[in-house]
Image (tube, rainbow, N blue to C red; front, side):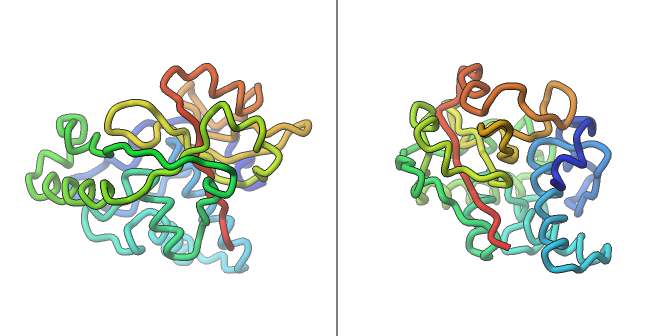
Length: 227
């Protein structure tokens, strides 16, 4: 319900890459896929706890966005979405249910940022680059669980509206290329997301059919908010 209030909001790429130092960015007028999810679930947590002050919102957003909820420079942001899910699961805010849906463990190095330094302005700093390489080294020790695309139809009935859907990819070094929220329409699961096509929208076709059009997609990772 909260996510639908953002329908039509403009898609803006790299909404957090502003300024010369890392800061908590609040932008509800332009969203990328990750900030859409972060803002929606931050508002959701406030609604559940019935605490509506702006400080509660900013603190909640920071908790979701940064490792262990601490803003300590660019490397403290949870850049890789599987890392975002894992860290927020440790905080008790979400639960990765991919394995429960029948997900499969895959082995894949996650190092896109470190190997594509020029794509990220903040990585011009050697200190930031070294810190990201250290994050990637830790990610290499973690398991990656993905529900393969061909298995989603069988498990679709177990996905709930409001679940966080991350799109896994075959692109070298990347875990996830896109994310959004599951939303049920006419008995099928669709994706409510900030689309790079231009705005926050709901896929016209069910999630399964939407994924089939993405050449690099290998499946999904599903996380359920726990508040």
